[in-house]
Length: 111
Image (cartoon, rainbow, N blue to C red; front, side, top):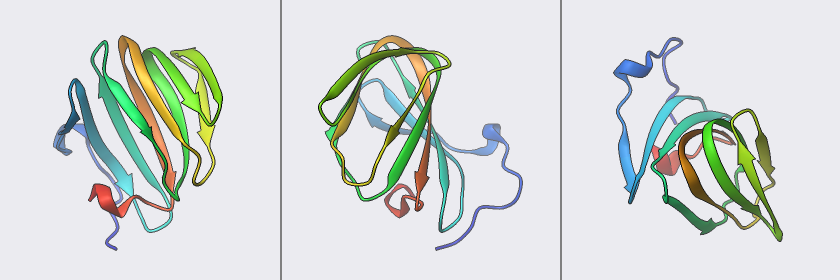
């Protein structure tokens, strides 16, 4: 896998549509770690899924219903959540906002 350059300006990183009302921007990465910004319009749904990557997410803005395993909570700007490897999870956007996802190892399927 290639490594991103040391400095990445968000204005130079492309946004990718990944679902109705959802856009993703890969910010930086190497083999072991990846940071991704995901923008949601109100009503956008990140369908329940699982992957081998550990994921930690910071709610930059907005309001989200977040489901991790069997637990569900409403999170707002400043909150965060942790998803262990291979655990089912998903989100629903109640108020338009942005999530900042960190994955380990990097999600090569995003490149």
